[in-house]
Image (cartoon, rainbow, N blue to C red; front, side, top):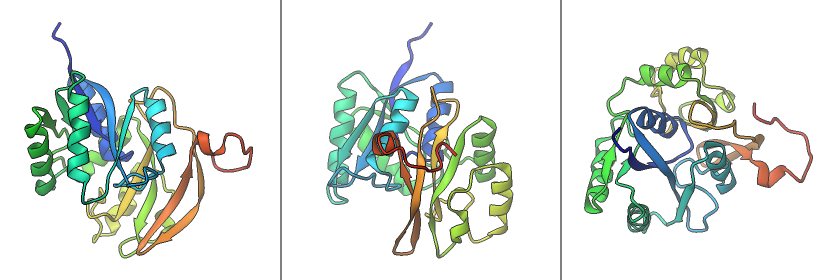
Amino acid sequence: MAEKIKAFCSWSGGKESALSLYMAQQSGFEITNLLTMANEEGTHSHTHEFDSSVLKAQSEALHVPLVQRKASWQTYEEEFMKAVSDIRDKGVSAGIFGDIDLIEHRQWVERVCSALGVTAVLPLWLMDRKELLRKFINFGFKAIVIAIDSRFMGEEWLGRKLTTAFIEDLKVLTHVDLCGEKGEYHTFVYDGPIFQKPVEFRTAGKVLHESHRLLGLECPETFRSERSPGKVGL
């Protein structure tokens, strides 16, 4: 039996990274690490602005170690390459990315990975949007909307679960990309075939940031000792 290729997964905590990880596993890759780039303080991720405790909770539920590196947007590429270099030196030869069709980002990940002798793998590349969402749901993933751009979507979308009804309702908004590829919405994945157990979490109010509405999330290290009420696990 051929030895599995070891790969890290570029991890946002949302639907595309989760689905790409699963499809890579199904193709025979062994996922050794999640890689997330955080802000300079190390408190939140750059992509979905997840609190670090949320990413750690996902990592624990997946049983896949999290590598999180701090960077400004100016130092992002440098720090990303340092992180990939460190992972590569432990025997990892591929990186899994959840891009769908943004050619500029594909070119970027292929360039930086190639420079380090790592192969960039994009399992979702050019996948039909509706097919992607249906695969995500049919494979048994569970996720909620945790951020919306109010220029495109109303606040009522915050907290909605990704279901078949969600897809049908979203199709009515003809100005919105079904997968939110223009930043219309972001998701948080808390269960599915890649998880060893569901992620324990609760919602913690809504935050306004410029044109974005964000749904606060808290995970075990934040609330375990509080014993206060909240929606856990949705």
